[in-house]
Length: 482
Image (tube, rainbow, N blue to C red; front, side, top):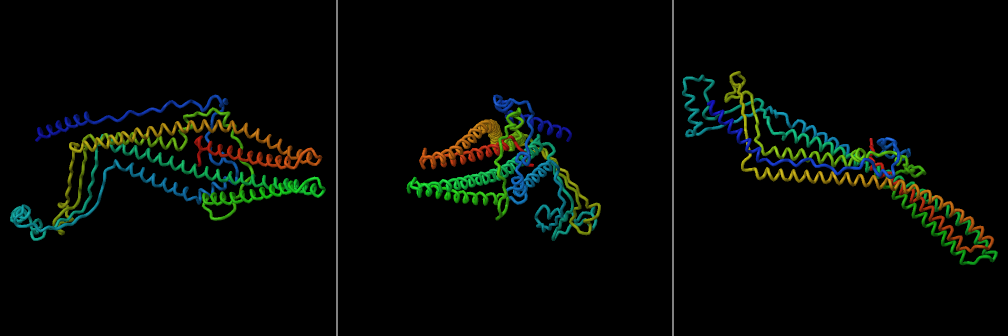
């Protein structure tokens, strides 16, 4: 018996060695292309250390912060993300417990009538004739019951890292899920900020149209008086009438846009009706960011989208290792203990206590093709996850670089547009004065007013685009929503 056990041990060892030699290797961990130390060193000259951004310190408008608070309470998408966190947590807990032995407690009852010419039937008949058993040990041959009450357990004690890597993959996917949730939350808040500042910009445009209509009305009064005095003709009056109606129509169009944006914003904060309270200022340039050395790799990996792809990549590596473990033998132990009897009278007696212990060594043979296929899929998934990770890092760096350049340029454009508005405001006054002294005609007044109006609208549009850039910059710098 001892020699037989030794032979079986050596046979198992040799088989394991053969299988391990034939198992494919997991792909080496791929390396990212080197990320520049900072973002655009030619534009970032400061030596200040970059500090991470938080939502409510970055967006300082109290009305906007109030909308953020409402969204946390009532935005359906935000509430869904909270439930997804609970789901991800449950999956992680399940994975942590997966390497523990299973334990089941239960009871079973069965009854069998054995035929006379079956081995069990003959065996039971012969047993009952034995002189070595008591009356309680005799078997009911007409209907043989079997009762069991106890516990059973099983444990894969040596799985070549399969369970450990499955647990690691689940952990990394949990991290990826939480980062994906952070990204969703960031998008919710940045969408709210975008709509909010669109409303502020529309208010500014509405105010510009209304102010220009007042200027138009004053010019119209001058032209009307000139016509009565014979110094202007009807054509000039009608031109000013048309110009006034155009401004009134634009005012109504702006009001339509305000309603649409307000309703979209109300949906994001989970409200049906109500006026959106807002300020009058579009956000300013965050030029101080340009005076900081931004550690590109650190900042980029703080972004939820990049962190999500990174954790998915690490999870895919663990999946590959777990898939490779399927090529090796599995060693499992199962055991049970409980009361077992074919008689209710003896069921709870100590002599009815039954135990069972079983060890299994299972080695894949004919299903190796399927296992190899699964490993190839896992290996390809690992490559795809790495490429997605590399892509997210590249996109994140270029997006951040682009936005910082935009901020620098928008600062120059805004200064130029403000000067343009000032010049054209003066031009309107000059045109009116020249018209009264006969050195200009009514068309020059109309053109000067149109130019002023357009320059003011252009300035608001540039301010809005600059603000939207600042909103995108919050996401690009990996700003935290908590």
